[in-house]
Image (cartoon, rainbow, N blue to C red; front, side, top):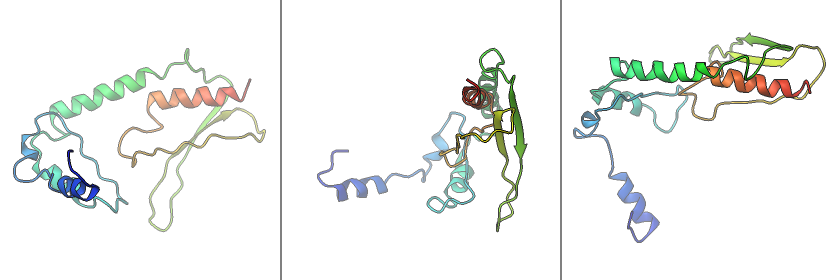
Length: 149
């Protein structure tokens, strides 16, 4: 950024914002997401959403979401990752104390044998995508099948 010190760099970064008509100039479909437990950007997604003229619920934004979902779901193929010999289940426990329902997808060899596991948790603030998307379903079957070999 061309500044001489880290302090000057941070000061320059803090001058950037989407206020004063800048957000209104965004012309592409934009998906704005807000994490419930976000302690750093609380309220900022709502503020940005209010200023956008190209909301994610616009026809173009919804079409983009559908294209992404179709792409990911096209990767869920039995010829890439067969489900034969696997047990797939979904549990939905309720967390405490907030009462949120958390959907957990289990994929394992179809046996009662105690096996090691792979625990995958999304590190992207749970804003986009899901273990229920086709590409992740295939990936999970591939990993679970490795235990059968």
